[in-house]
Length: 361
Image 1 (cartoon, rainbow, N blue to C red):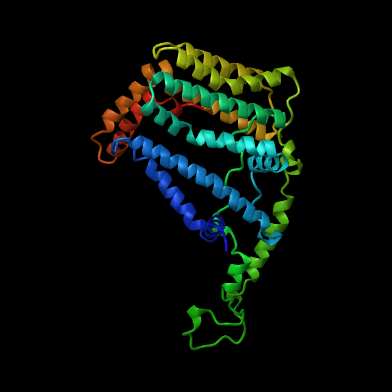
Image 2: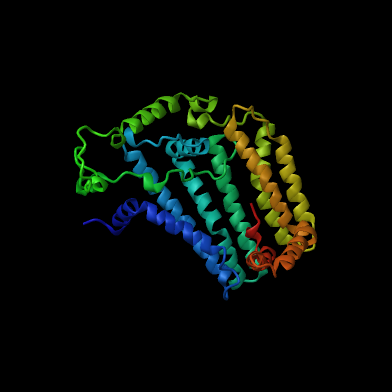
């Protein structure tokens, strides 16, 4: 008799497309929960964290299912560089796989933990919890850095790129499905009074077979420098002390920022200035990858974009960004359609003041 876990895995594979749709709908719902009732933001983030954890588990099952399929079910589009790199390291090294998954679990649940601490303990206990989470994240990131000896990639696990509806049925399901004969007349032509003497070219799959053959021929030959590299070599190893220092500064910056926030009052600009200086130092020390190293360039571009989060932190948030958003919310509060956006914005602004992890990276 199959275990409940095995039955759930079978149910997931059989209904992957439906479950994916439900996941997307619930994620959209979480945007509108804050402010609707007491502790609505806690309910919203708990739902988000739960969906992220389930999504992580579902991705593992779908990837395992895809690996069991034959070559004929291989996706037409090749996986992204990020997926190739992270999946190769996860398959190659157990320590990497464990640390990467633990890091993602902490990132998914950190905001819920902070909300719980804010309700159960005082500000001192809350900041101790935040610093503890940052210590755990820093240790896990250092483990990943030690294993790969390459710049840290975020997220460190493969992201879902396969449409669950594209998964073929299992052999048991295929045996239960009726197979239509190729000589049978299609159902929408059964009422026709004039029978075809010869197979109609429009009812054959010759054209689609030819197109598939052309795609199968051209896609593997559309090579780029990254296409011929082994996946674990899509990022070059760190070689100089300067490059190692850049990664250490990048990894330790969130921990230093949390420690300074815990020790300072809200009016102090020291945590914000120190964090910005560390980010700029890491960006200055890091190497400049060549154009052929696309994955590393993508990661550095993501880090540069994360600098925009400083608009929602500290003195920049209080003196510039928040007044601008408050003014925008007031101006659109009476507009027929934009009033919904205004209400949503007014409900989210206080949460940025109250919780560290709403804007932490």
